[in-house]
Structures are given as C-alpha cells and as structure tokens.
Image 1: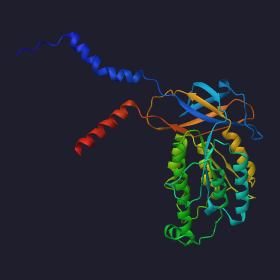
Image 2 (image 1 turned 90 degrees about the vertical axis):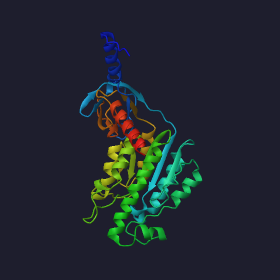
Image 3 (image 1 turned 30 degrees about the vertical axis):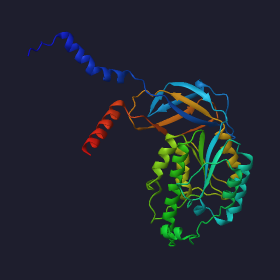
Length: 338
C-alpha cells in the first residue's frame, strides 16, 4: 500500500479544522443581560421619563456600556403572598387580614395570578390562581402565632415540636424553605413576578444557627436573582423595631431588588409595592467579560438628582463553551461507564 506524503496544503487544512471551533468561540459575543431597576424619588414615588443617559451600570467592578433602557409598562403579575404565621404576633392578625384583603380588592388586576401560602401549607401543591374568592379565603385563614408553640396538627408536632428553642429553629427553616419553593415556582412562570412576605423576622438566639447559614437562604437569593423575582417584606407591627429579628429578610429584600417595610402602615406599603411592580426600567448590556458560569455582582446608578435606584444584586453568567463542552464530555463518560 502506498502512502502519500502530507503536503503544506494538507497541513494547513488540518490546522484550520482544529482551530476553527476555538476561533468561533472567541468571536461569539457575550449574551445580553437584562437588569430591572426601580427608581423612586424622595417621596417614594416612581420616577418616570429616564433614558439611557440617566443610568450607569457596573459589573464586577467594571463599568459597562448600556445598549438600551426601556421603561416598563404595567403587565400581568405573578405574585406569591407568604403569610409567616410563626413570626407575626396574634394581636396583629386582624390588621394583616384587613390590609391584604384591601390589596386583593383594590390592587390586583383581572390578569394577575396569585398564590397565598402559609408556612405549613403543602409546597408541592403551589398553584397560581386568579380566583379572588379563594385568595380572600386564604387571607381570612391567617392567624399570627408568634410565641405560641402549641402544635395545630400531628404533622406540625412531629416536624416542629413544642420545645421553644428547637421550635424556633425549625420554624425559621420552614419559612425559608417556603421562600425557596415560591422563588422557584415564580421563576418558571411568565410575567412580572414578586414575593410579598408578611413577617416580623426571627431573632437569632445563641442556640440558633446564624441567619446567613440557614441552608436554603442562599438558594432563595440565587433563584430570585436569576429569575428577577424581588422580595418585598412587610413587618406588620405598629412600632416595628429594626434589629436581628428583621435583619434576615431585610438583607434578602435588598439583595433581590425589593424592600423590607417597617412602621406599621401595611396597607400603604402594599400599595407602594404594587406601584413599583408596574413601573421601573429594563437595562440591557453585553458584559465586557466572556461567559464564565459565575455569579456577577451588579451596581446600578442614576444621575437624576434625589432619585434612589434599586436592582437585584447580580446575575448568573451562562457557562462558557469550553465549560459546556467539558460538562458534556463528563456526562458522556458517565453514561458510557454505566
């Protein structure tokens, strides 16, 4: 059998075939990233009429060139109302019911979809609905139970118990798990989404794990940031305190572009949240860095005097082509091993 000697032309063809995928990857521009920004004035009213020149954005400490800034218009909303019975005093029960009923009657539109959840409700059965009677019925069933550790069902006694210290830890975990499930559910739904959380928060006693190490809290933030689901927290106490009891949810709200409202005006705070969800801006940019599959911190600012900007803490960059290729190779090897 005769073999021909490789020519320069053949060698060049081999080099081009080998390097073509890499060159294509290098030439592929990063995918656009969209960040929602809420802008309010000193009176808390949404600021309208802003344009591209009024905003700046920093990604991982690097200033980015914004491609567009679009005002958001009212659209269908997907809302989860989490009523944290475990961390609301019984004395505030009627105020919470009245404020949320008014919200359902006056702020919800016909195309809004809502789920009302309490900590021990079944998470797998979370369903968004526009059935106003069902929403009002769920709100009417709310009852604050802070400091009351008497189990209401055998399941609660088994899962949480009666000892105050252990019950507080278990209650905190149940609430955070409910937040995680709601963030995931809303992230899969079309439309503008938000979680409305009614809670005083929970105090970190020495025998409780630190708030930032609650197993699911980081997952809640990641889901909320990935799917643009802000968390709006509402402390229903008339003279709400700021401290360790509200620090967990105040931090979560700040990281996701929402707010944690104190001071007792629950009805007014709910109206403000509804206004914010119908306003704001959508900022679009292409990151200067390549896709890396990591979480990128983002800071949004406006040059408008006296205006305050809120936005989610960041976004998850898609994995790079090399990372996706390596992952596919690993999955293929695992499949072959089976």
